[in-house]
Length: 223
Length: 296
Image (tube, rainbow over all chains, first blue to last red; front, side):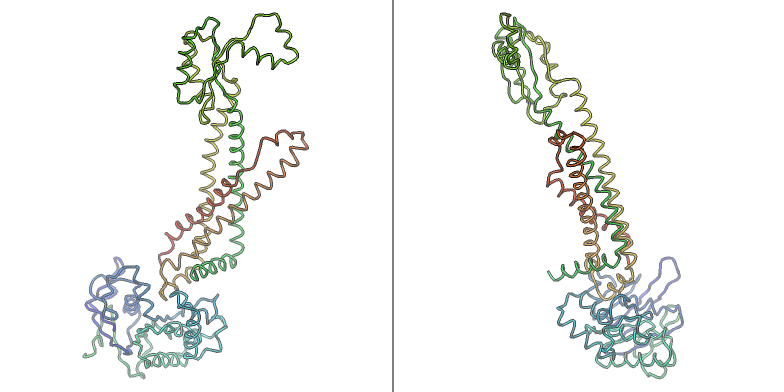
């Protein structure tokens, strides 16, 4: 589902963000991306949702090399990838329902389908009763659940999360990880960048370890 | 169709949400277009006046008493050769005398018993685009020294000056008009830039959930065009209201009722063109601000 082969990436003249990264995550797999700050976790995820391009190497999503795809194709690829961020990235001026339903506005899907899927997604994250609230009226944990609802509302095969519990206390963090596991159990490939070692240790899931832009463990399953 | 409705809805929502900025922009653009309309109005009426004065412009070539038919034909031929001339009419001494008598009316008796004092003439009428002192003067120079020509006459010196004034005003109006229009473009562009800046987070999120650039840009274009159209329409409307007020109150009470007869407001196509220019500028201003701020 997600493959990277000998990927190099740098931001301008700075020292490389990723060096010779090779890794593979299978369909419906759950993988943690671990490493200290600055190890390249965010850069790796940004390559996957095409916010950045690599200098060399191959990035394959759904079996297609996306390292060199045209800029005009990017939006359509992103519709097949759900993304969750540490800072939630919700629009404060729109209600929970509008924030989640926005995905269908962008895709130009019929209203009826949008409403049905939005409600379904909010039910899954347990926030159907807060559909008419504004994000800033919700707790941090609830806001992150809204962000997850938005990320999965159109059933993307891949869900990427960048430090999704970075702003949350341990109880809420566990709640979010449980939710991500639940999404994974539905067949979605989930990749989570985090440095929450407690949760990762407990979860028994696969861990890809990054240090100074290199994968030091877990890049390929056989390792 | 639902897409367009969606974009319109978003654009209106954005404009309504930032009512102050919207109001200030529309107001400023309106002032700019008020200025533009006034310039256009003055220019238009000067042109109308010039046309009216131009209609009466003819080149009169007065023939000497000893001018024979062959000399007359040569002069006539020279006049008719010019592409500026639409027709040439010969007025014999007898016809000229008749006209003169008619003009004198009852006082024509003074001519009784006198030898016919008026000369024969060739009168050249010009095509509409050439009815100006410069064109006519040029032709006059060509015929004035021909044998058989006693004198040429075409309007007065003041008319020449007036036409020169109209020409200069047109040029000046054009330059100022372009500057004013550019100013409106910059104002709209800045507003859209503010709008893009205020919504940079929204743009970023939309891009992350897979919005195409077109989807993100469309509401901004609609906003820009609406701001331009609205500002231009209000500016032109104020100009029209001021014009109606001036002609119906000030001119009349100042005893200038006759002035009223000659002047008129801009014709509808011109008003339409001005308002559409506003919309066009809005789109142009949006292009320039999106181009720089869309990279997210």
